[in-house]
Image 1 (cartoon, helix red, strand yellow):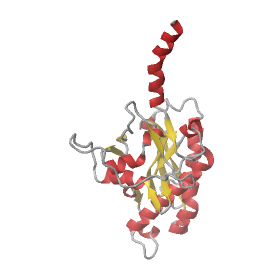
Image 2 (cartoon, helix red, strand yellow; image 1 turned 90 degrees about the vertical axis):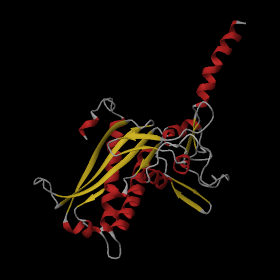
Image 3 (tube, rainbow, N blue to C red; image 1 turned 180 degrees about the horizontal axis):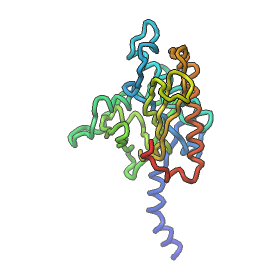
Image 4 (tube, one colour; image 1 turned 120 degrees about the vertical axis):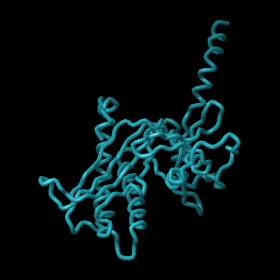
Amino acid sequence: MRKLIAVICMLPGFICAQDYTIFGQNSPNEDIDEAEHRMIVIPFHGHNFISEVDRMLTPVGMDPRQMREKIRRKCTMETTKALDDSLDVLDVSIASSGSDIDLIDYLYNAIDYGYTALPESYDSKKKLDFKFPKKKNDKALGAYSRTQNGQIDRVEINHDRYMTATFGNPGAVDFLQDIHAFEYILSITQLEIRRNLQELTEGSYLIAMHFELLDSSGEPLFGGKEIISLEDDELQYSVMVSRVLPELARNISIDILTNLTSTSTISQDFSDY
């Protein structure tokens, strides 16, 4: 009888724990334990591309806006690839037969258009008309997190260093399914190109990629920037996407690995960056 009472008392805790299980969708054959430790990469927004040499970087036939967007996408791919090589990072797109969706676009659309918490009268069940792949051979990359009532939580990231957004747009939020299901959130906050005023550093220009690593709740763990010096003849779009961005991404992945394996990571003063 005592054993029965003990089992009954433990049931609520067991049920609650099950409600918070994170389900990874990285692979049809991947079990839950392997899917829990993941990172999603959020690239810098095109507006956060700071450069004194935009015209020099923009190829013939491409305006600055197009150049920024192409570099942003390239930065996303290279950063994700470099981190994927070292941290087994989850990709940031959902692809199925006939569809190729960039989740990051939905995230930034939500920021750009200033979506805030929806009024109570709004139908919160409304979602974009996109069905996730059901076949095993279809590629589905994303993550789900169940709450106590069995519903998917919405995403909230409040980080004043580069953005403050409470996402209430069902299309932007539900499509992410949902960002706090990832253990880490790597945000590439800025890509910066400046004239080199540091006499001891070689190169006429400096390019810096700023990054911040957040935990699953959106709280910052640490941040920093990687800097590479460039000569005048390296300020070309082709050089940027073929050599510079991959090198910056690899350096950031090394920084992250070093910090995550350090016992002083969490206590690091984030205000230094």
